[in-house]
Length: 224
Image 1: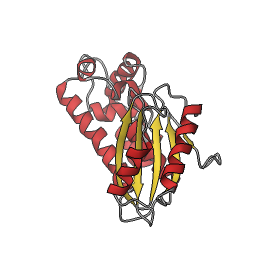
Image 2: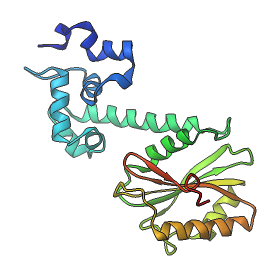
Image 3: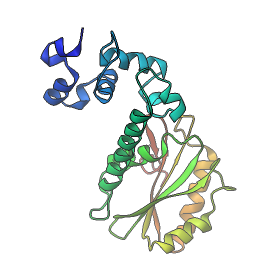
Image 4: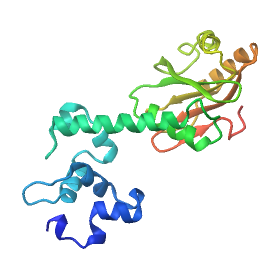
């Protein structure tokens, strides 16, 4: 049955307008993006098939161009549209942490760091540099690879703080495994950075470890 023949309250677009986007399933959200199905399939049926093919929504959104375009009903046009949507989402979160207002919401910070680091295939160490009012100056990725004292250099972090005239900083790195439990190396480098930055009166507000669906906060656990 075509979606136009469904009861009004069950059609994805109308459901979104009436109840909000959060009320939709992954398949319904994807169906709105797809717009149309294929012969004998509604957009929702096609969406379910694609979610199965790519394991889940994240698998589809993170697929390479080659893999994505091999999906039924997909192609270069939809791939470019998807990349534009994903980039707009990243910029939306970044602009929510702009210089016009101080960071007052841990959730907004987590959401932003998730969009930036969750899908990295290797460990990435990054910093949010803040001014004296805890407003964001800039977000930078600084180091790549396994995070330990041999790959994260406190002197380089210190130099970037001075360059940006930062008064505070939020550290972040991802765990590609998805598990956010801090390692001993994570704790060790955090303490080394805390001591180094304290020498020039720059405070580390937090260190977030980003996983698949959640994040670990050093501050919330009393480690900073």
